[in-house]
Image (cartoon, rainbow, N blue to C red):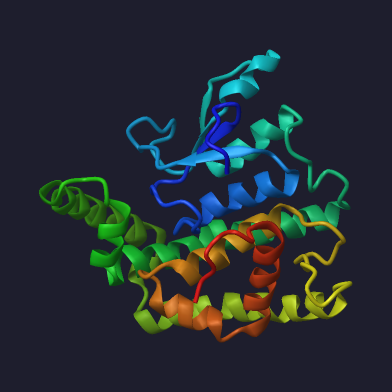
Length: 262
């Protein structure tokens, strides 16, 4: 993307460009930008200035010049999308959906963001802690990484215990993750066979255009495929060919210059 400051800026958490983020929420936002043809710059950013203390966030910058009220810095992927929708900067993917489809879309996003997310949190921050720590806290000096990493580990452990995932065995979590991906793969298998061309993206609800669920689903698939701290989930996802093909087609269409997972 251009570095001209005439565009909004997306803080992705890491300085690398031309590669996918380990965060599913970053890729979710990037997909929405690219589908809408919205020009944007990327930078590492910092949780210290992030509006909600987390990645991603955006600096709306020049988009505020149109008289739109509200802060320039905006956090949380869902609220970023909602704000840009209110500014008519991106398309409303779900506006014309039947009510049942809207519910299905919302249910799939909740399954990924409010259920699978915690399985991934456990895998990354508990089971593969050191790999995740070095990636997530890359900008901190080593002694600080150790201290902050320990605090995050304790916080995640407490969160997962209260949420319930921390009380499960590894085999139980593995089974639950596999169940989710198996169900998604079965649906995507059908969608891919219905796609108009062999290389055309197929959308999870079966329509001609993506919905918000596609942005989230693509983000979660890619996050697993590129993250070194999610080896078990990566193996599970790679075992479902329709899931991988779905992501590859979106990659080829919307992220052709990005380095693809191996």
